[in-house]
Image (cartoon, rainbow, N blue to C red; front, side, top):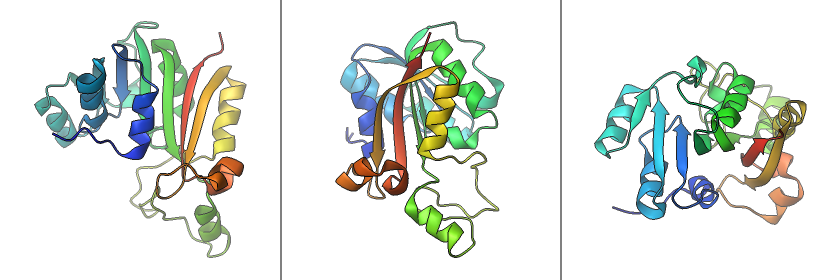
Length: 202
């Protein structure tokens, strides 16, 4: 089986220490957890709501709980894992602030990634064409999208600041999932996907 991950997940994997404990929220078919288990000796759990994805993850031999993330993480104790991952899912939950704070209660660190609504293509489609954006990172039309809380990099960083969350690292990728001089210079304009490694300020 190939050990290659898509570029954003490879960055996430690089932020996770070998042998650590990981909780992957919205884990999908378990691609990241499977890689971390095989390549870095990580002990991990996943949470996923979609039936088919849960079945796929279980077939990989991964411990996965079927649950809606809006139900919270009450079954996990404080700092019961080292890292909680939320990959391209923050914008699809009803209470993103609550989930971010729960992540940092359960884990010593949290890793969050999301599509950037401030990307120039999204601004162009909304500002010039007057239509809700459809981009590589936001591929759904407005009437069938799972995304209910879209945000920009500035929005997320303000959320962190207002809630005492420390940003430890940030990587911003373009539409080809590359870190380039343009999205490093003006990340909120040229970054299509943002990844943040965070910790509680307490």
